[in-house]
Image (tube, rainbow, N blue to C red):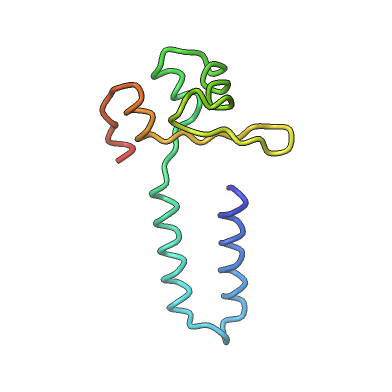
Length: 103
């Protein structure tokens, strides 16, 4: 789980622990909305993208790091990179229809 998701969930948990200050129904609704939004965000893995392109994983990683592949981003966190690949942008980039699992 990434730090932003974990931080938001921890904030909701803290509010629940101080329930007298908050409306429980409101907290549960906020959590439900937050959970639904997390589930809507879909990403492809580097491996999936490489297979679809018929290229190596290194090709995809380096292309994202250099910004030459425009369907995702590579962010360096400390000494390692983390990758986000937008399925919509990826399939548009390779000229194929977006599969149902990403809709």
